[in-house]
Length: 95
Ligand code: HEM
Image (cartoon, rainbow, N blue to C red; front, side, top):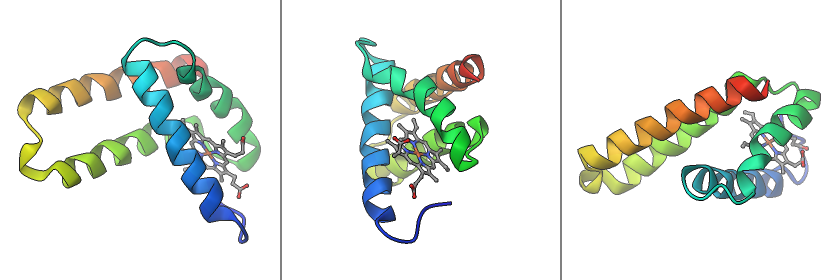
């Protein structure tokens, strides 16, 4: 889906902006979380469906779980599950 030249920069920037948006969505919702509906609209042009957004958030959570390994507690797990459910609803409402 990504261009052949410079795509690593786009992917890195996408990941950083997505993490900012998720943290803001989970916290104070000051502004960066609005990237999510904006990018759902603009990504239509890349052929990226809204469903892929939920999958991207799931991959980020799974990666953090892998990195934290035994430090990933049941409290952290249920907080993340709640966040991913809320994000799914937000993506559905943004379509
Ligand atoms: C909250 C989630 C996401 C954010 C904040 C985000 C952000 C961005 C940004 C800033 C760009 C650069 C161009 C632009 O401003 O539109 C971009 C490009 C792109 N994104 Fe995302 N993105 C997200 C999710 C996704 C997902 C889930 C996919 C596909 C699995 C995806 C695929 C792409 C592709 C294919 C491009 C074009 C890359 C290119 O020009 O080669 N994005 N994204």
